[in-house]
Image (cartoon, rainbow, N blue to C red; front, side, top):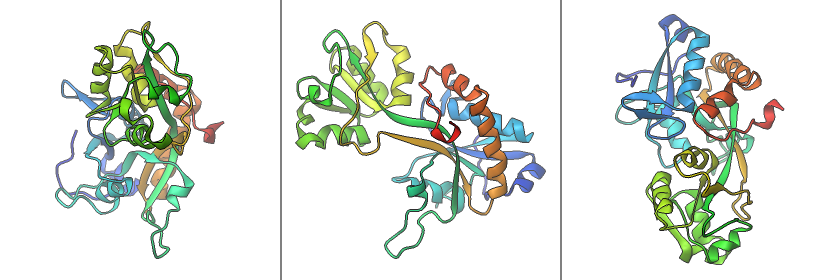
Length: 277
């Protein structure tokens, strides 16, 4: 359900009293949140339903169109509201769970995200390559893509990495596509030999190709910066009590194996964040 009226982020008591919770998810972002025959599906949708069920309230989805930065998304959907629709969510999915990011300061030393509380990491994300074993049996190092073709989603970190790292030596063999799904289509017809993207998205899309021919690689990514990072949830900083309740729900999902089962449902690689280990 898409909220379509002016609304504000609310406290736990207000949510329980109203009988609904508004949770923001990214629009058209498989395997996390997407529409299939007008039905909301995805990992984040299932997690949001678990949160609503635990709080004994009805779920309302706020579909987010991503801004240029995560800070834009926080502003538009948690503490200020979009300049057009002004809708605010109570909880936002897929927020970074990183202390350096949460403590980031601007040019005058003020906290950039002081109005946002980030909590409850539920997945450790990383990068992934899938390759055509008929022409590229193994991905031993990234240097192989000086000689083998690879694709990535345009304007993504993998795209910038492939076109700029190693003195740009991989640039000539790199192609860009509007989505990872389109890159997969190009790989299937032999236009490119491999695709690089988020491990969650690449593993999800791998179920739609011949697993005997297209394999997930196990290589590392030198010079890319962060190899792994955690994603979690966020609320307005005024509503810490809400974060404690929701955090307990996420912890239970991770510890009892339900989080793993949700990722398995979408054939997506899951890695438990170190927070729970």
